[in-house]
Amino acid sequence: MYQFNEQFAAASRQFADSAAQINRIALENAQALFGLQVSAIEERTNATFAFFGEAAQARDLDALKTLWPKGVQVARENVERAVAVGQDVFARTLKTNEAIGQITKSQVEAVAAKTQASVEEAADKVARAAKAK
Image (cartoon, rainbow, N blue to C red; front, side, top):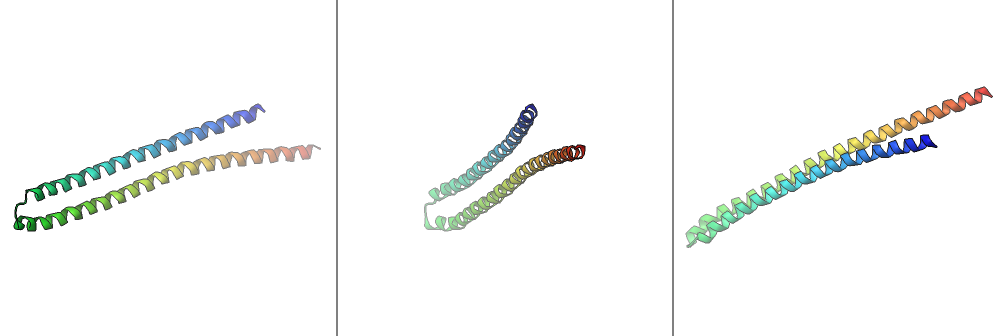
């Protein structure tokens, strides 16, 4: 019974360590993604307000005509930034999920190896006991 408790405690400790690693990786990813999103919003907001500042200073129709290409340019750049950030977010999330998958895979392989060793040991003991009879 003591051996079972010791094995259970070791398995629980290993699971807790893996869970802590996965949580750390996920938290770092969330922090990075939040930072990317906030900086992208800040850049888009600055560009948009700069354009609105120029638009507010326009006093005649000719000034408004020159603002049209600038407005299109600001909108295009905002869309490009949003797409680039979205791609970066996707790539980082994919990398994070791959890292978590590797941790999980190594845990499953370790448990499978330990289980296989225990099964082989038990089969050996049964075979030896059968031969002894």
